[in-house]
Structure formats: structure tokens, C-alpha cells
Image 1 (cartoon, one colour):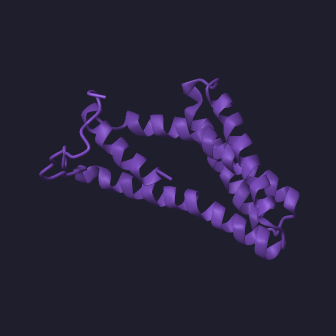
Image 2 (tube, helix red, strand yellow):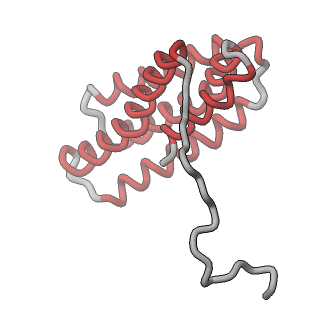
Image 3 (cartoon, rainbow, N blue to C red):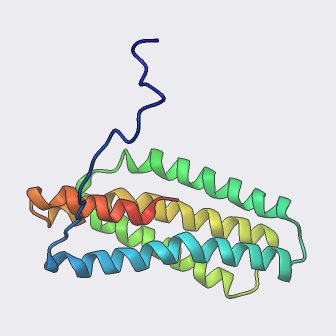
Length: 160
């Protein structure tokens, strides 16, 4: 019990002022990343809920079926991305974004429920497949001493 901190103690960490500073040249990258993260973390889920519940008149169970399919897509894409050589990174990034575009196209066509499942699977597969190659490329363009600050800022956007 002596190893545990005392409960009657007041604040133990004293931080006078915390500043998080990103260089000016990286603000554009952070803005693009913030918009991308907002788009890909919010839009597909909001669209899915609205479409399945309000258009197809199904229940939240069907929404969860689609979410399960997207999880399978992410797992498979992770497995595949580990086996792709880095020399193909731009082709993989392009393929990933093309798959996300296919999702958007399919969803504009008022698809049936099975096509919704397929479209969301394709979207998450493409997003997950391209993610490590895109981030590796992005950080290859940033000086090593600045990379940790930029990565921290980008990661804080994506926490959900």
C-alpha cells in the first residue's frame, strides 16, 4: 500500500503553461488533414444512419450489420497493406481513394441494403489500405525534428 499515491494530496502535476506550436508551413497540411478527418469520420456514419433508417426504413440492427462489414474491410485491408511493398505506395494511395470514390458514387444511386453493405466495405477497405502509405509519404516530406509535433496534432484530430 505504500507504493500507492496518497489520496489526501492535492494536485501533483504542476504545469504553468502548455503551448503547442506548429510551424507556419505545416498549417496547410493540418488544415487539409482536419477537413479530411472530419469528412471521413463524420459523413459516412451520418449518411449511413440517415439512409438505412429514413430511406430504407430499416432498424439500427441493419446499421450494425453494415458497421460489422466495414470492420471486416478494415481488418482485411490491414492484412493486405502489410504485404505491399513501399515502392507501390502511390498506386495504393490512388486505389484507396478510388475505392472511397466508388462508395460515394454507389451511395448517390439509392442502393439496396446489400449494395450499401458492399459500398461501405469497399470504402473502409480503401481508406484503411491507403492510410499507412499516405501517412508514410506525408511524414517523409517533413523534417525529423518537426515530425513528432505534426503527428501529434494530426493524431489529436482523429481521436474518436
